[in-house]
Length: 79
Image 1 (spheres, rainbow, N blue to C red):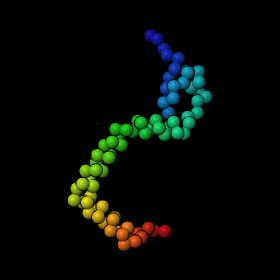
Image 2: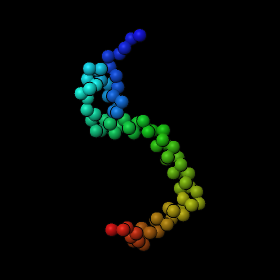
Image 3: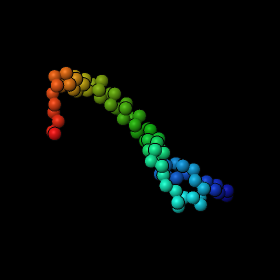
Image 4: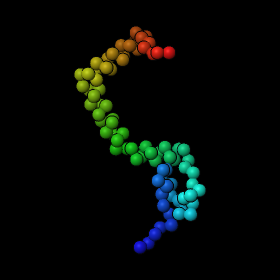
């Protein structure tokens, strides 16, 4: 069996030599990109579900109510 001398970091996906794995520190931006990449299917499903909800009668009401609140300057914050 052939073992590659490179392996991906399990947190950020960066290709590392096996000898570098212990000293590797993930770059924040690379880590975030990798996490979003892994959640791609979940995010796509969420967008589909949100679109379906907003197209429903209840979703249309929520959109109308939010728009009405902004137009009237309603402030429902708890500051």
